[in-house]
Image (tube, rainbow, N blue to C red; front, top):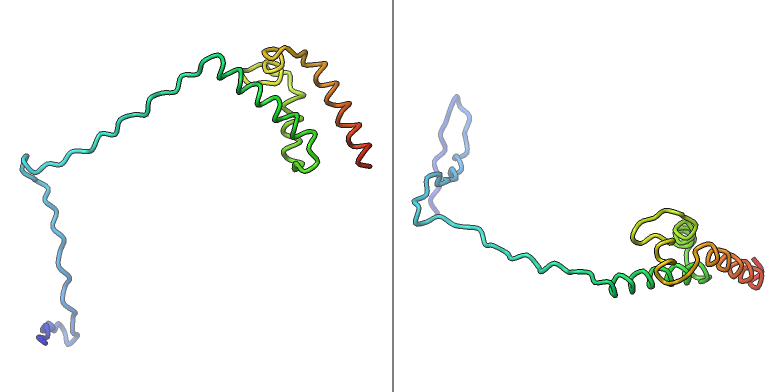
Length: 124
């Protein structure tokens, strides 16, 4: 095994210097690399029937969460806050009800009554 000679400086042995990394800053044009172009996924276009189905699912899922005794309190509170809100935006409770043919105030009232009866039956 060949030993690498150590240089001495002021009586202290220095380990050999590690090799320097070399970076080719000036690469000839024939060696240039280009990035791979990844095509975009085709954009999904929502049609009216898809939006209707999403609104219907959102409304029924929220009603199920409110009636389900197994649902967590945070999920129930989120569903109740959404239902009690009068905000108007594409997936608000009011818009979902109107699109599905329900009167928001009546559905709120019926849901509250149903939840109260359910709680009484469970003894809560």
